[in-house]
Structure formats: C-alpha cells, structure tokens
Amino acid sequence: SRFSMHLQGASARQIAVADACYANDFACGLSQLGLREMVEENRRWDSGETYLVADRCISKLIDHLSQGINVRTGCPVTTVEYGGPDWGVRLHCADGRILRCQRAIITVPLKPLQVWGGCHM
Image (tube, rainbow, N blue to C red; front, side, top):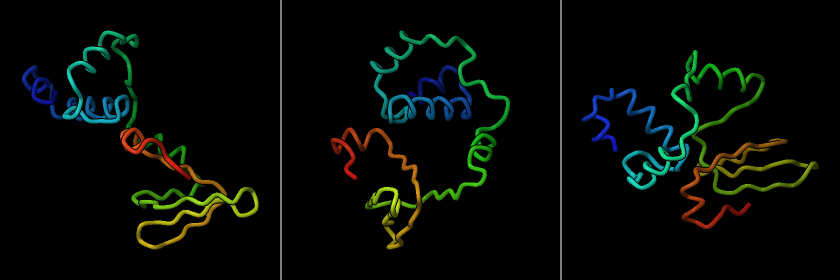
C-alpha cells in the first residue's frame, strides 16, 4: 500500500511510479490493490531490478509514436460505429460531437470491462 511504501522510505515519485505499474498490471491503483495480489506479483516477478528503467520520459516515446497522427484524448466516447472500409469509424462523443475517421484506437481500462462484462461495439 502507499502507506507501507511511505513507511519504508519510498519517495512520492517512487510511490507514483509503483501506482502506475500496478494500475497497468492489475487495472487498479495501490489503494485498491489487495495484499494477496501484491504478494503474488512479487512471487512471480522475473524481470530483475532493471524493469522499466527508461533513459527519457515516456512523453518522448508517445510524441514519437504519434507523429503524423491526429490524436484525441479526454474525449469520452459513448458509441462506436464501424462501417467497414467504405466509411470507417464514427465515434459519438459525450459532448455531442461525432468524429469520423478511417481507423480508431480506443483504450478502455480493464476494470470497467470486468465490471460490465465486456465491451459491445
């Protein structure tokens, strides 16, 4: 937990990185992760001490990968319509906008999928 990491001398930045890693692996933050999951993750760990050591910030990687692509974030989508190669994808946004594109990459956190029982498009 965040509290136990703090007691063991972890910095706020280290706790934030751990929170992000666990959010990625378990679809929840440290505050929602149970001791059992943490023990199991530690038991199965096989990546040594150099896991996730980067030589620059992750935003540089994202900037590089998104060159030439129209990236939209913070745009909650309520409906996805796929019309095949003829008209591509229509994204109906929560604010009423409809975005039309040839392709779309849509990210959904794992936890809502588990709670809702899947994602229907």
